[in-house]
Length: 135
Image 1 (cartoon, helix red, strand yellow):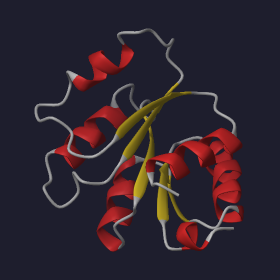
Image 2 (image 1 turned 45 degrees about the vertical axis):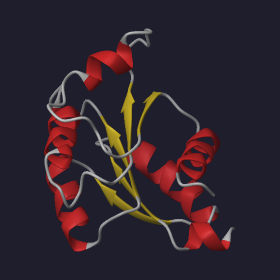
Image 3 (image 1 turned 90 degrees about the vertical axis):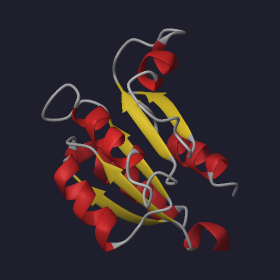
Image 4 (image 1 turned 135 degrees about the vertical axis):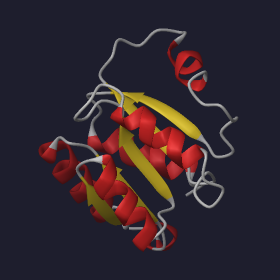
C-alpha cells in the first residue's frame, strides 16, 4: 500500500457485481479508497457526495450506451470534466475504437480518458490507474 494511493478515491461504475467486487478488493488492497455504483444514476449520486480522483466506467450497462451517455454528462459539467475516466468495453478492439468514442463528445475531454477492453484482470487495472494518477 502506498501513502499516495491511500489519499485517492476510485469510483467503479459497472452493472457486473462480480467485476466490481473483484476490482474493489484489489484496489483497496493497493491502498485506494473505493466507491461502487451499479448504474449511472448511482454513479452520479456517488460523485455528488464525494468527487473521486478517477472513475472506472463500463460502456454498456442497462443500455448499450449508458456509459457513453454518462461520460458525455461528465464531460459537459465543468465541475466534473477534470476527473480522469477509464471507459471499459467488451467490444472488439480496433485502431479506430478510441477515435470513434472521442467523436461522441462535443467538447474535447480535459481529463485523461483511457479505453480498456474487458475482460481486464485486477492487477492490470490497478497498474493502469496508478499510472494515470502518477503513483
